[in-house]
Image (cartoon, rainbow, N blue to C red; front, side, top):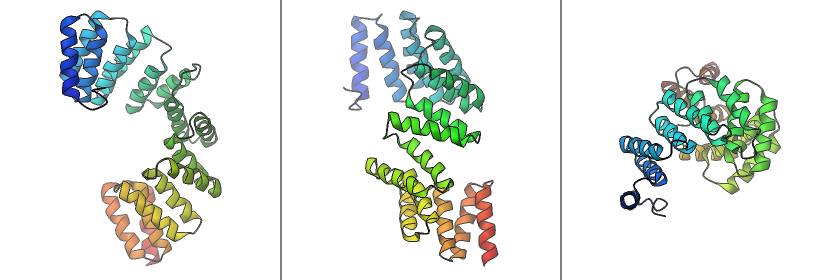
Length: 277
């Protein structure tokens, strides 16, 4: 309860009092480590998890927590080592496999990450996040049909999983299934009207439908919610081009290229605006 109320210092004192009475209770050490990690007190978090392992060396969840601790600090290889130790104890843990895959992906080891996530599919408790990561990996491999199928599976399990809605709608937009994409995104706004990526994809959807006022409204909403969004800024430059404001589009492209100097789509947009002037 104290953690849910974000009363972390009080929660620490409570657990420390409990440990004075039961110093060998691993769960209290583990929970203490989680609170220290939440406070980004990495040293005390590590010490608490190590104490937890001292009293419960076969607890795979503690190795998972240690992996999460290392990931939080960007130490992905250390995290991978901890996750693998956890899987030695509990090889069927879908949660550890999900986290291991995430760490591998962070080190650009996508093939191994996808293999790990794929292994999780045989278990009934596979998190939708694992399915989502697999689908995104398939998209990166240009296996769009397989990715679409997985996104639909995710939404069959959890119709409110917004990242899957966003990615599926992008596939639908790019394959000109605009009405289906629009319906999907409108339903997403009922779930969370302040989800920036939904507005971003709706802006592009209306742009493809040549409904510029609606496109501009959702583009402005996406940039209000996420001012640095690359896709939002690209949409904005496209809207300005459609309106014939090539100078404004050029300014947006040049300013955005300062932050994303190697973005090909921005370069193409800039070339188009210069050609039209």
